[in-house]
Amino acid sequence: MPFVFKKHNAVKDKKIQQFLLDEAGLSSSVSQKLLAKNRVFDDQGNVLKNGQTLQCEYVQVAVFEGHTRGLKPVFEVEDFAVFDKPSGVMVHPTRKTTAYSLLDEIRHHFGDEADLAHRIDAETSGLVLVAKNKQASTILKTMFEHGKCDKEYLALVKGQLKNNITIDKPISKSNSTIKVKMTCENKKGKVSITHIHPLEFNKKAKAYQSSQALHVELTQDNEKINEVQSDCILCGSCYSACPVYAVNEDFLGPFSLTRVWKYVSDKREEGAEEKINHIQTSGVWDCTLCNECTLVCPQDISSKADIEKLRSKSAMVGYSDPNFASFNSFGGGFGFDGSPSF
Ligand code: SF4
Ligand code: SF4
Image 1: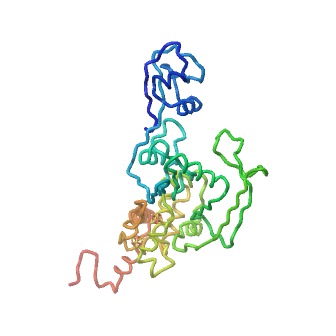
Image 2: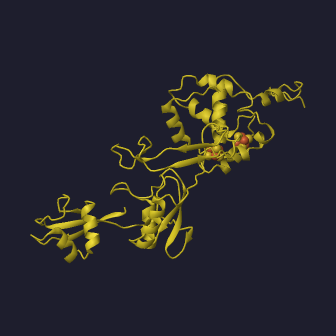
Image 3: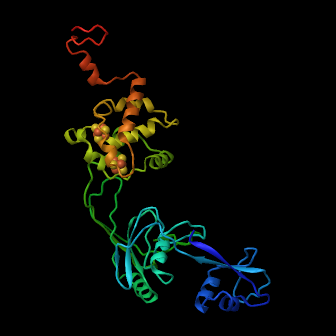
């Protein structure tokens, strides 16, 4: 928990700002900042404001204490450092109960004066520049404010982008209650130009294409459930590792079949049997169950296990392994009927 409450016995009738200087041992600037940010409370949890006279037993000051989960800077010089922020970690806390953010690591490694030079979204992984002292913080923040730094993002998108795109729309804070929400509706906003260059169409990560070919239509709710269930990042590793896909591009492949399983196993799904019908050719029976897809998946998704379950489902609606059927009917001579012919 980065915010900890430090208790100090109150001195009745003393002004809070003087109390913070004399009794809590805080500097004038830190005291003012804490008061301005509503981080000073009485013993009942009421916010104490600048100029207020103390009548309580004790005063509580919410102080940010960064703790580490082992993240270290990937680059560091005297005045600044760079962290490689993982996806899912916020750059700074959004409320006092936020359990962990990049700011924890920054303060843990470099102390109270260290700060972020810019932000990236929690979902985005990537490099974050961090100032190690006040002076560096001012310089770096000003550079970002004045557009003196370019940011590059590598994004995986759904569908296929064929052309370069330039988005030239000024951005500003929206009027929404979410204070950090940005909008490009205000023409007087800050200049913001984004160039998008398609780099590569990842044919191997053809999950969405295949699911469309299979008439797997996604409602918004299903899409959400599906993403949460699978956590797939469409990296395509399972396709790269799959020996069947390597020799047969018609094979639906690991993640497409995992996706089908998510629908088929969803009790609300009405067209399960139809989807099972679609995966009989170049699908479940072509997989060799080698498990390579599972071994390489960074999200611990086991397509092989999903394919096995799809096979069982297929059997329940009357399908059988065509490889086994042809083996069994090979000249009739091997007799799987309990009466061996040799
Ligand atoms: S288990 Fe099946 S889908 Fe996975 S890599 Fe092997 S052959 Fe491909
Ligand atoms: S390897 Fe895992 S995360 Fe990557 S596409 Fe396949 S299932 Fe998705």
